[in-house]
Length: 118
Image (tube, rainbow, N blue to C red):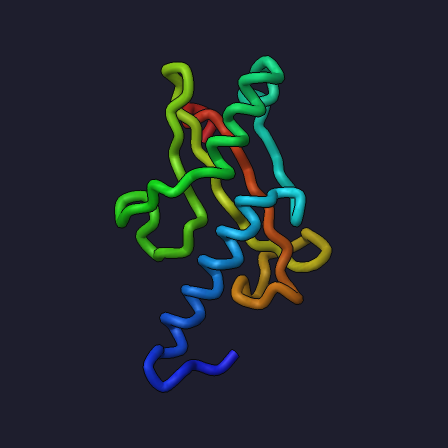
């Protein structure tokens, strides 16, 4: 990846990570999606509604997205707070990815949890 003359490398890297995270969040079947026990205990229709809310999430701000990578969000559903987050792993899901901006060596995992499970 090379930076354009108008965009420093760090800004371009962040934009790449953000775009990869957004694409994955909108299509979590492109990686792994995990739901915690509290989320798995929900009735099927509530789990689907929560997943739809994560897929459609766009309320990013400096408070929940300080690095502008779109890797975390908070959702309120039926009076309960939920978090979702994206983590970066190597191709075998054994260790962290050495470069989350490189989709060829990075596997993403989306975790959806109740806020009180965090």
